[in-house]
Image 1 (cartoon, rainbow, N blue to C red):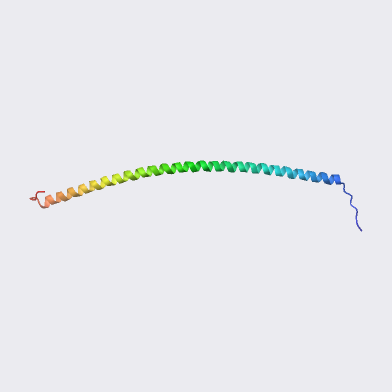
Image 2: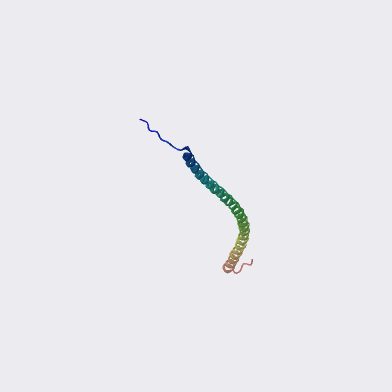
Length: 105
């Protein structure tokens, strides 16, 4: 035995249209969110580029300062070595003069 079900096609179409409207609204919201996220990603890329430029600038400044300090340390090392050599020579001369007072240099 088969049962006969009567359905009004207009009601079914109205329901389908309502569901399609809801889906379209959700799709529009998702598209808005995607656009917003794309804008944020672009902003992040721009900020990363700016930070990269600043980092390169800082690197070059540090390298320049380090090179300057390196030159200064080399100069200070040379002066210290010269002074130490002079002191050692003076001490050796004084020791020689003390041990051999009759020798003229």
